[in-house]
Length: 127
Ligand SMILES: [Zn+2]
Ligand SMILES: [Zn+2]
Image (cartoon, rainbow, N blue to C red; front, side):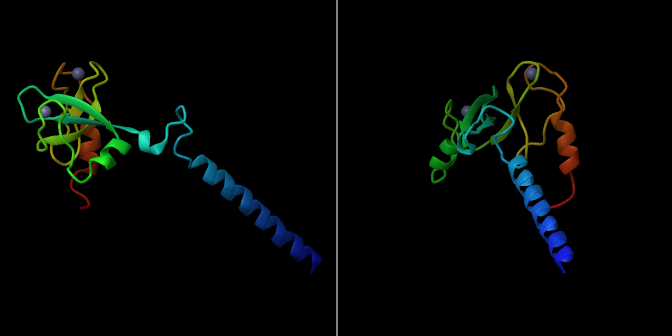
């Protein structure tokens, strides 16, 4: 009986250790310098005018604007806005997500972009 008990205890301890390691490794801000989740910067692009407007916003700023919606700080448009990623070549933003399919090449410097693959991956399945 004592043997069974010690096995059960051992399993419980193992589970607890594994659990705490799991929780620790799931912490969102361990990879960079500790950025609060609300201070995570989201990149955006405004396509209301011919020359795209790049802007970025923290999750905190976004939450504060949730009632009026996101607006382009350059032209004030609240339409034709898209989440964006940064071009690895020229650091300008390019659109990703549902409003515009990710371009395969940067709008600004024509560098090949990794976003196209992500777009294909999310392609026709789901939603
Ligand atoms: Zn704009
Ligand atoms: Zn570029």
